[in-house]
Amino acid sequence: MPKDFRATALERAIGRQLAGWRDERELSLAEAGQRVGFSSAKLSMMENAVQPSAPLDIMALGYVYKVPTPEWQAVVSRAQYAEQVRTRALGATPNFDPAADFANLVYEATVLRVFTTDLVPAVFQLAEYTDAAMQTDDPVRTARLAMVREAWSSRLKDRDPLVVHAVFPEAVLRQVVGGPRVMKAQLLHLMEVSEHPVVRVQVVPHGAGAYPAMGSPFTLLGFPRRQHNDVAYLETFIKGEYVEDPGLTEQCAQRFASLQEVALGAGESLELIAEAAAEL
Image (spheres, helix red, strand yellow):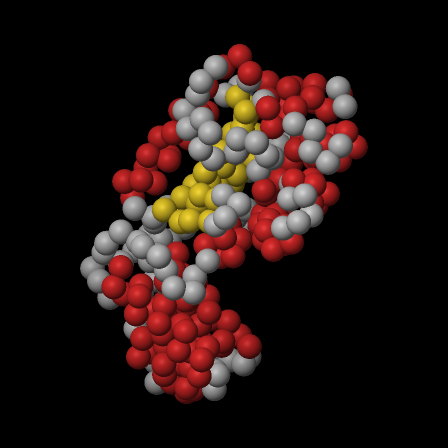
């Protein structure tokens, strides 16, 4: 393993695929390791992306698990690509869609810093709000947003729940998405979730004028393992993109800290959300 290995999002997706193969066959780490000739520790590190998964090891697992050849070949191709790009800037990744993978990272993260510019953050959206925002003509994106929401909801019951810090401009509260009934329900839900001890919601008021990262929404995810760097996620209606360069993710962290300074405090933000809901 490289001395200071840092798994990319692609390598982590590969690890989840390997774990999925084993789970489908109802094998323990020890049973699977014995069949393929790996220690259970090595297999665990591959599945959790604590070490890179070598293409030959993936081939061996595919053979032992009796995975269809095209399926394991696709994963081997991704591993080969990951091996090539780990130490340089990421380019176009074959057969890997960050927008489809994003909910998995939300499930694995410990801290989520979200800045939106025109919508309530995906983790807090009600289904009717999401449907209205997507205009019901983008079922794939709607389903992915639902997965993100469900990933956060499932983490609320964890012993180590996902911490969410969200910042957005007041305009998000005033944009009546889905009509007054849907929007009011969404704002009331936002008030409810903001009272969770692991959630902090802040609103940038109209009077703040220009503010950091204006017009550039992003999500910054932090993770518990040392081998997993922060990941920034950017999305348009065309595609999603991961940014994993530590220098760039640090810029996102700095922008977010500046946004929190400009925004109202949690209490004042809650009052503003309540005011917007009362007006509907």
